[in-house]
Length: 185
Image (cartoon, rainbow, N blue to C red; front, side, top):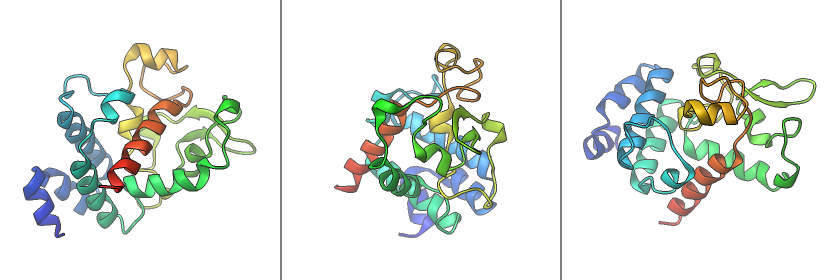
């Protein structure tokens, strides 16, 4: 499918333009807006596990296609899903804590501290690497970062989204489950 066909089908012209210009942070913000609009949540600015499970498969496929194509396979939901699937079988969620985060978070470069041992403190959104030098699967990321002020505090953050806070396996698992279900359609 050509990018022009995808953009006409979903009104993604702004995203296509930003991705082609390698404006990754702005493209992440547009991606978040499109995802939220697809589940009638544009005012909230964030996802719950329930709303992630309701994102239309065709939109996820189209967004992924655009991200993968523009980044030469470095970014996109399918890249994140592949990394998650490779690492999830090695992870025991009952052992998850700030000293033992899901290895996905370290692999995609979202953690603030990763050496000598990863700590489950997340980078602030503006400190992510918005370039092709970022690790595979680093973007899109705002779907995971955007939290309410209260949820951010509950996650150990500073009321500024995911930054400085701890992992939320439910949100990660929700999107990965949705992507897996969408792959079967």
